[in-house]
Image (cartoon, rainbow, N blue to C red; front, side):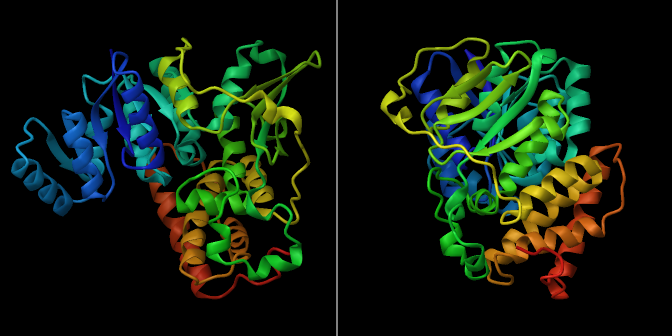
Amino acid sequence: MKKIAILGSTGSIGASTLSICESFPDRYLPVALAAGSNVDAAFEQAKRWRPTLLSIATEAHAAELRARLKSADIPGVEVVWGTAGTVAVATHPEIEFVVSAIVGVAGLEATYAAVQAGKTIGLANKECLVAAGDLIIAAAREKGVALLPIDSEHNAVHQCMRGGAPAEVKQVWLTASGGPFRNTPAADFAGITPAQALKHPTWVMGQRITIDSATMMNKGFEVIEACRLFDLPAAQVRVTVHPQSTVHSLVEFIDGSILAQISVTDMRLPILYALAYPERPKSDLTFDLSLLSHLDFSQPDLARFPCLRLAYEAADAGPSACIALNAADEIAVAAFLSHEIPFLGIPRTIERVLELTPAARPASISEVLAADRMARTVAREVIASHSITEAHVSL
């Protein structure tokens, strides 16, 4: 029985992980959970799983949850809160495996603490490696900790990499659905609304990641994450638009062979792969081969999707640029969703913030978080000043 912690238990990855625990009750037991601010969902998870430790966003949420657990006569669940609570979940002494699925840098400290504590990590939070990849990878190597990707693309690469030695890899291909606007004329981008951008053609995801898919920034983050996970320069991590989303990624080897990973578009499969690695337990996640009757692949248009170009530039520029890229994107996406800026304001904001970010290499998680806060401040100032003009990013 593998005892696990889930950071982000009430999100989509958390729910899928708990579904795996339901399907494999003799293999996986959730012992510690870190929820967000959804007290109702956290209560239901506590009632179903009876975790030893449960963290929630705020002290007020924790007090409410404790009262509800007491009223329902559910003993034995220690409720903690905030960043300290999430770190406690990630480093719980009984835990062997930590699923890191908190969106953004909010889960960074807990993920790093889990690595330092020697826990195996199932990584579904790409922002951790985007913002602090050098530090996390170095700590994982020092502690002998496995970082197993849960993102479908990196999970696919990990599976394909088992077919050859790292020195035999020519390049990695990350597939992208292209989002809802892959065929939208460039002239129409200025009028894209939040409602339109939130309609992803393939995956059901949270709001930020759905908008990031629409701008292709999500794929840009994945490029940076792949560089960190597989020790590759950005030039060896390529993106191909594959609308069917049946091929999750490919690895091209120096002899000309290409291995592709194909499966259902269901996040339970990469989660199960990470939890069971290096085993492959039998599951009901089967794939219909008739879906392979038509497959399209094409190059992404960096002029229409400048966020992908900005991510490659940040990957080459270094750690401070990657931190600023993620921070500025989060602020810009929130501003777009609240109708403060147009769709094209997202890449314009990010590019301006990158222009204003000095080169630096943070030496600690606290320095990463300080750089993140600064970039967010700059992004808000850029948005408030209305300086995101056509001069910065043109289509």
